[in-house]
Length: 314
Image (cartoon, rainbow, N blue to C red; front, side, top):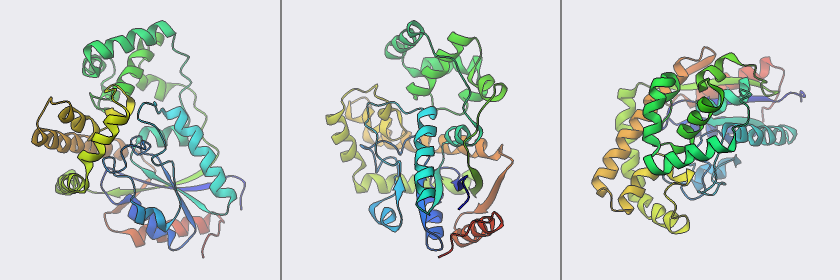
C-alpha cells in the first residue's frame, strides 16, 4: 500500500443512487463508505435524511452516519478532521475509502483545504445568535444575498448554522465566505482522490424526489420527528435545520398542516438538488456517469486504482 491514501468520491445531487454505486464497487474490492453529507450525520433522523438503511449498511462498513446528537453543530472543519481519521483507519486496514455524499463544501474542504478564517470574537458570535433567535435565519440569508450572492445560492434560508457563520465571518473580517474560499491559502488533505459524479437533469430527478418523500412518510418519517422532538425540543438545534426535519417540525408545532409540510419538503428538496447540480457542474475534475451505471462506475474506479499502482481486487 502507498503511504498516501487513494480515495474514490461518489458525488451528485440527492436521490441519485450514490450509495447503490458504492455497494456495486464493494462487490469488486473491499470498500468502507465514508459519509460527506452534512445532514446524514444526525442520529435522530436516519429516515428523514435518507441515510443508508440496514440492508445497505450490511453490505460493507458505513462510517460517519448517524452519530451526532441533534443539538450538536457540525462544521466543515470538524468534518475534515473526522473524515481524515476514518480515511487513514480504512486505508491502514487494507480497504478502499469511498466518500459518498452531496455536501460539496465538505468535499472541497477535505480535498482542497479549509480557508484559515480567524477566530470569531465572542461578542460578534453572541450578537449573531441573538439575531437568529429573534429574527430567524431567513433575515440573515436576505442580507447574505446582498453581501455574498454566490454563497447564499448554496445554502438554504432556513439553515441557521451556515447563515450565522456567514454573518459572523463578514462582521469579523470584512470579507465574505466566497472570498475566504477562493483567495486564501488552503492546505489540502494528504490523499489522492478520484471524483465520480452521478449525472441527472433536475427535470428527470423531480418525480423521484417526490416519490421518495412519499415513501419516507409511509415508512414513519413523522414518527421519527416526533421521537426526535421529545428528545430535543429546542427548534433552534442544528439538527432541526435540515430539509424534511424543519418542515415536519413546523407541522408538529402546529404552524402548518401536514399536507403543507410535505409540499414544502418537496419544494425545498428540489431547490437543494438544483443547488447541488449547480455546485458540482462548476467542478472541472469530475468524471460523470448516468444514473444506474453502477457497473461502469465500479470498472472506472478499478482502472484508476490499477493505474495508480493500488491493487484492491478481490
